[in-house]
Structures are given as C-alpha cells and as structure tokens.
Length: 369
Image (cartoon, rainbow, N blue to C red; front, top):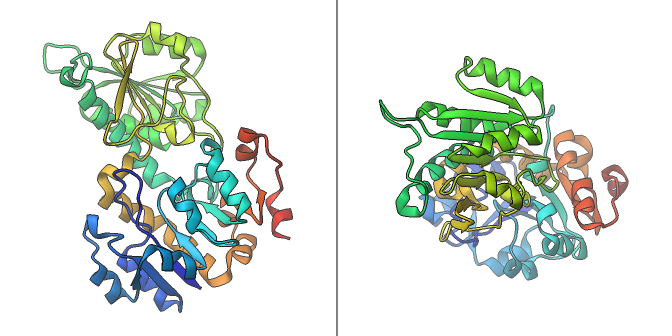
C-alpha cells in the first residue's frame, strides 16, 4: 500500500502523523511512504531523517493523488478537502460529531475513514488515551496561567502558599482527562474536587489519591455547588464519537466567581459548556460575564514533540494492519479498527455522528459487506 503523511496546517499544529521510526516500520513491511516536505521539521524530524528511513519527500498534491491511505493527526480542514480522492482511506482524529462539513465531504467522496478517537480495545480507547493524558495535564497548566490577573483571571495562585488558601479546582469527568488533570492539580497543591456519574470510577479515584481529593456524584445540584467556589473548572466529559453534553449552561455562569476560568477539554466534541466556542493557541481565551473560557481545540499541539511520540506509539500497529490487509479486511479482522470506522462508501457507520446531524445510520458490518 502507498501511505501518505501530509503536513498539518491547522493553526499552531506541529504534530505529525508519522515519525521517521514509523516510516521505517512501514517500508520494512513492504509499503511505500510519501511524506510532505517539512511535515515534521517543526519538532526536529527533518526531510533527511524521513528519507533515510525510506520515505519519499513530495509535495502535498502528489502525496494525496498517489496515496492509498492518508495518515494525519488532526481532522482535515476545509482547505484540504479538495485534495482527497474518492475511496481513499483516512486514518486520523476526526471528531465528526462536531463537524458537519467534514462529515459531508467524507460521505460525498466515499472516504473510508477510521478515527483514532473511536478505536476501542477491551473498553479502552488506546489512540485517544495518550492525547487525553496530555490534555488533562495541560488543562491544569493552562488554567493556572490564564487565571493570573495579567490575563484577566482572578489572580489566584492555584497552589497557594503557607498561610493562604489553596486554589479550588473542580473537574467534571473522571476519565483519562479528568484523572490526569487531578494528578497535576493535586501535585501542585490545589484543593481538588472531581465529579462523575460512574460511582465505580469515583471509588477508584478516591483510592488512587488516598482520599486527598473530594469526589462527588455528577448531579446538577453537585455541579452547581462545586462550581460556585471554584477558581478553575475543567470539563473532561467524553461520549466516544458523539457530541459532549452541555453540563454547565449559560445561566449557570451567575453561580461562578468573577475571574474564574472554564477550561473545556471536550471542545473537540462540541464542548461540555454551553458558552464554549473553539479557540486556537493564537487567541486561546475569551471572557463571558467576567468568566474566562479556555477552549483550544488542539491542546496537545502545544507540546508537539511529546504528543507526536505518544500518539504514533499508539496508532502504528493499527496503521500497519490496515496497510497489510486493506481497510475493509482490517476492520473485519480487528475489533479495534472495526470500532474506529466512521464512514464507508458514502455511508455513516457511527451512531453518535448520525444522531448529531440527523443522517441515516448504517451498521458497520452491513457497510463492509
């Protein structure tokens, strides 16, 4: 198979879909790899590194035209749509439930799309987990920064110092993002509360932190109580492949202290705060009613080297399986890849995406037959 890895063009996105080491694995397996010029140069992977690993360095047009499978990091943006050819395989993060235009393009061009974020193995999302870990930790670091008075926040040092109150951090969601956010927040000395609807997760978190954080069932009453005195509120809710639920409404902002910050890690899936809207690393925060909002859609892009290494470690074997068997056979023989299929031959095969846009749903097995 011919594999193409283009340069990411989203604002401040420096990650790359394949490292030189990955290229070596593909070429050793008998595949041909095209890398777009300077695709990894921002994080220290030169064209020469890729060339030595066995890749051919080409321009974007040739890469898309000649590749059977496109391996990316972020979902394609509108200026990339015209490069795709009918029936091509796309292996990347997609977050389709928050992007009707991209969904329409994939269906129209009959793209065989496999989304990193919906690949599931033994109830774990292995290709999403490393970026969730990074995003959870960054959520605390970025919140700590933008809550500073110089950025419009309330001027609280989250860790506090002896003789002063600790900053209060409320985390909604005890999944990978939430737990990693809690680890960092506790590590710097914050007063942390975490909420979830899964009491088993809360029990695990309670034991994990040796009862050093507050755990609450995620009811509306508990959410409102927790956000009322929080300095930092982190939205870490995930429904795989579907739009995130809006857990804090616009009217709820009245209960939040002026100068506090809402950091929405679920923004890729539409956001879990009603007042959230996508932002970039160029302009990451905005103010609504005196409440700061941080809603960057590619948070891990800020630590692109670490993020690329973590991501490609988790996606490589799936990509090699797709390249070896072809997308259809790979999906039929690998349950993880099967779960990752979002569109096939003009059909939408992921319920959460279909529900988001009221489009017909086709079971994956049926679409592949």
